[in-house]
Amino acid sequence: MSNVIQTLRERGLLRDVTDPALEELAGRGPIAVYVGFDPTADSLHIGNMVGIMVLKHFQLAGHRAIALAGGGTGMIGDPSGKSTERNLLTPEQLAVNLAGIKSDLSRFLDFGGANAALLLNNADWLAGYGFIDFLRDVGKHFRMGDMLAKDSVRTRLDSESGMSFTEFSYMLLQAYDFKHLFEKQGCVLQSGGSDQWGNITAGIELIRRTLGKQAFGMTTPLLVDAAGNKMGKSAGGAIWLNGERRSPYEFYQFWIQREDSMVESYLKMMTLLPLEKIAATMVEHAADASRRVAQRALAHAVTAMVHGAAEADKARDASEALFGGRLEKQSDAELRGLFQDVPSVEIPRADLDAGLAMVDLVTRAGLAESKKEAKRLLSQGGVYLNNSDVPVGEDDRVVTAGHLASDTMLILRAGKKKYCLVGFV
RNA sequence: GGAUGGGUGGCAGAGCGGUCAAAUGCACCGGACUGUAAAUCCGGCGGGAGGAAUCCCUACCUAGGUUCAAAUCCUAGCCCAUCCA
Image (tube, rainbow, N blue to C red; front, side, top):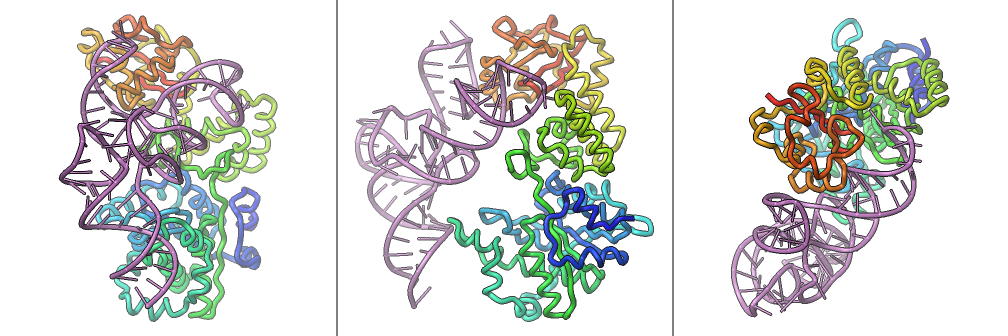
């Protein structure tokens, strides 16, 4: 089996390592690695997937993967990569978030079996640590000069809003996490996004000073789009891994819509498809980019990993039905089949019979946040009925039974890619 | 505690008594071109009523005040930054 570090490098998941000796160490035998996850929401999003994939590759290579939920540090807020002070989470919210994160992670990592992954919560060792003790045990080993020189700190100090002492202390907590895991779990490696470099090296330093041992760190590239912007959010907000917050269909669609220039790197980073397979896919894609072969492969593979193969198939089928062309004179059953997967709403039949204003329909379908926005959409020719290529116009100001695509349903589209199925019951 | 500069739309950032639902940029949403891509161009971007013209309501940290009229002036308070102690 090839060295996991080599694998990560080939797949574009490796940006930096603190010491090249890591590769040799990982080649000698199983090591334990940890990645921290911030519990700022009750679900992880695709930005977190890079970290998850790193753990996944380590686990597949026979190493021990540790996911660390920042139950303790989440109370503080990591200043890295943030331009302003963060809001503090309440303990109740934190508990909810931790549960959600665990459920997300369990779909990627194997938490059972011989080489089980581990999910730990740093609140378990941070929460009860007294401030005085912490300062004596940990704070003593940090020099102000080093701390102030960290990128994450400097950026913030130079900014308008400055930085609170609380956030400034964050790196000590994360450094201590590493030391704790090093001692209790034999964890010798911490991985994180490139913005974590400072926090990771702080931990390595602490271990060296207090235990006289060497620990390692590595960083991964940030997941970015073609414009170089941090990815994770899109039109409707973050791309969550949790199906409740982002349906498999929407998740699938997100990946279908990726730019050509990025697909290859996403395939390498976000899926487990063999590199040869990816290369072949890219050749096929290059032959006719408009078929979006690579995007389809990407969307299906990632959706299958996050939501399961069955859901990925359904998302693909629904996508093909909707983006296939005009949908009219459909059978109710066919459309009902899509109903589960595509965003949809039900409206009382009586409303339709009474004469439903198009503006209201668009708003109730969730395609516009307010009636005003719906009017705007309509007047700009951005609303389509039953996948017609002609936008609805003045004649369609009132929706009637004549607009239905099947006995009880119609398909509403805003712009090119936002759909909503409407059923009248 | 003192001095100075600040708090404006998702962000950045103008405006400093009326013509301000607030310039401009980013982000976002439609449209054209396409391939559910990129780039580019055009339009839009608080809410409600109306087919529309238009009208109404709520908004520039908070609470008061001055004015026919306040994001803009005054008072008090809260918050932030920088420097000094």
